Image (cartoon, rainbow, N blue to C red; front, side, top):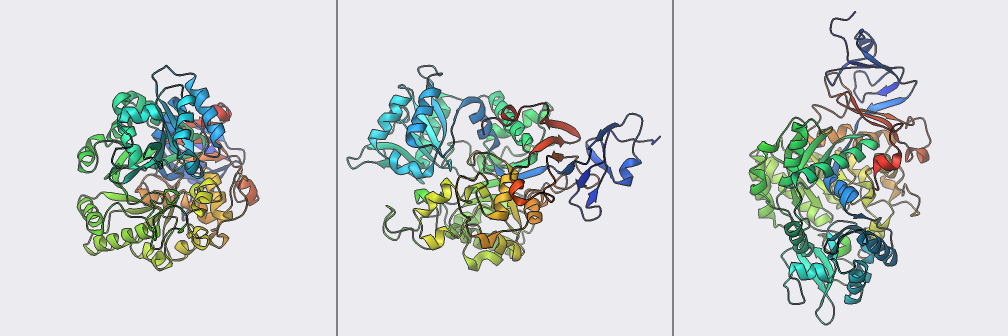
Length: 560
């Protein structure tokens, strides 16, 4: 008998390790939550107390990773809020609000979303606001759009926030008004933050409720085979909740958090140095607060994405409108340099090509100053000028992409109404980035996306089509990548981008035993079936955290 036997042994499977030394094996051994052996080496670790799992030919791969999500917000929506798909029309949305409000107390807030970006014009009137008042039954209501950057508030919510026609637009945001100067209830960017802060003050959320929401979000991620992720904009309250979960042995995922340097949409405090000051006290075995988050622009449908060339002249924006960045070059460089000196990396939200260029210019300055270790992500970066493609690899900047935000759907349709067709159709140059040697890391931006389903994202990367089949066509199909490349985007590339490559992303000996047992081998089915692949089991650190056979899909995955 082996003197130091494995705790767990997987047998008779097709196990892709994503390592170069032993890329595919049939056996895997786990000891103390880590991969202890592969192939024949795994078999030699079998002992009398080793638990044995016969995979019966099933396909196994490393746990999937998500470089960009908002897991706690998704958990909150699932547990506490109205949760609607962004494909609803106004009538359907109001019906959902009314049904949700009927279950609330007379003074409780109606909170949630999402409404589709394409509805913005319909919502932008006092008449529409009155209909929201009626649907909410007099309760305050605050609904997020599909980008989570913009809000629709009813009369009671505006009143509580002190917003009326005379309220000045906040820096970085706008309160939309009708011809008579009345606030319509549509709030762009920091405009919505005014109501979010009021909501946080009137309805504070406890650390335990945040921990419940975070844990629920992670449960849903497990049901899709995700075992590690980066939360893209994390409050100090959530960082403390994650530490609490980990200290209690309840954090069953690798979590990298992004501390906001600025914030126009969530209304959280503290920001910048105020949250960075608490960074180390919230660090734990599975929680790594290693990034700052900078919102450098907004979103194209609202005209707040920053572009090198103007939006459509008839899209309702000022003449020659290109959108603005939230920081000038000196301010952005200052943030990156000051944080780089402390070994802090940065995830930077960019949707327009002007903001992408500003990030690359600023990182060039940081690299020239000798800071080679910090990691930099262009988050979203749907639009990249051709002259900037090669700069990603040269400067070691990761393209953080979320396929659900650009393959054919409500968001791409909304973007097509504000940008010329030749530009709107050229989103996410993934093939060009990979060919230039850049790192692409895959994210969901859930709950901005309807679900964190990695296989739908992979299908979109390979086909450039909508995996749900509801929206026809392919968006810039020349930028398709291969299946193998797409799987790397959600495993090894994510691990490198987030700094988790030392513990996960592949099934190398010594790394955490994070793996997923799939319903199908993605390499042995037609690409059309790839979008339907599901997780049969998900394991984190050698412990099973999800089993489809024991949890109905609807309950495990929630409504997301």
